[in-house]
Image 1: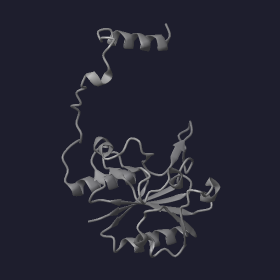
Image 2: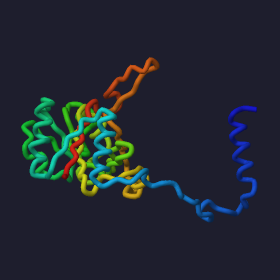
Image 3: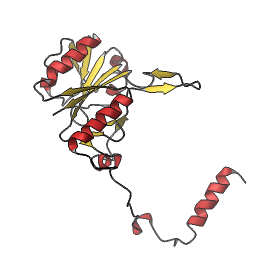
Image 4: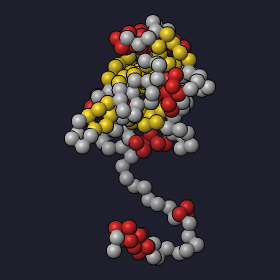
Length: 215
C-alpha cells in the first residue's frame, strides 16, 4: 500500500460516520486554542516584536513620534547611499520630507524591470505580529503593490506601535481581509543550500529595516 492510499484510507475512516448531506458549515468546530501565549503589556508586546524581528536579522529602529520620523528615514537612506527611492501611493508625504535622494512615486503602469533600478522602498504595513516577528502588508494605503517590496534590495517598513502591533498570528488574521493580496515578511529574504550556507536577497530585499513608530 502506498503512502497516498494510507492517508486517504485514514480520511475515509474518519469521515465514515458523517452523513452524506452534511456540509462543513453545518457543524461548529471548537476553536479553544490559546489566542495569545502568555500575558504581556502593550509595551512588552512591542519589545517582543523588536526582539523577534532582530532574531530574523531585520534592522530595528525606534522612533518616538512622527515628528522625528522623516529625519530617521532620511538618515537610513543616506547611510544606504540610496539614489532612487520608491514610495507607494497613500504614504504620508511628511515621512519622506527629509529624503535627499530622488523620490519615485509608484506607477502601476511601470514595467517590472524599472523596479530593479531603484535602491530602496519605503512603506507602511497592515499589521505586525509580535510572537512570530512578522510584518504583514495587504496593498492598503502606503503599502502599494506586492512586487514593489520584493524587487528593490532595501525595504524600510514603518510600523505604528499604537494600533498595528498584535500578539499572535490569530489576532493578526482577524484584522486582515482574506481577499486582499498579502505579503508576510519575517526578516530579509533568505534561503540556504544543502550545506546550510545562508544567502540573502534571493526572492526579496536583502535588507529589511523596520521602524517602530511610537513610544
